[in-house]
Length: 77
Image 1 (cartoon, one colour):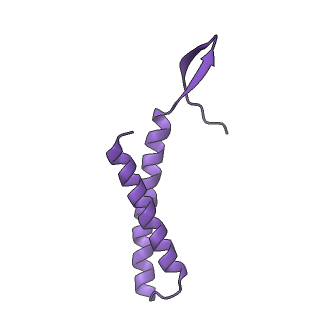
Image 2 (cartoon, one colour; image 1 turned 60 degrees about the vertical axis):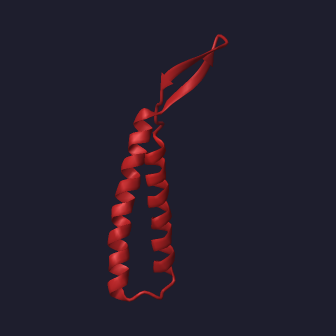
């Protein structure tokens, strides 16, 4: 994962946390709550997409016979 993608993810996640904190404060008007919710929904989509991209790229390194081997990452259900 490139440095740019991780920064974008971290920034999106940080902004999402800010929005949640503001919404939980109870100090926003209904209109502001709706705007925050809409922005938050878009940020959740961005973060989910980035996590899915990363998940597709992840490979585990497994030590076998004293050597490291790459094997595809498998998601356990």
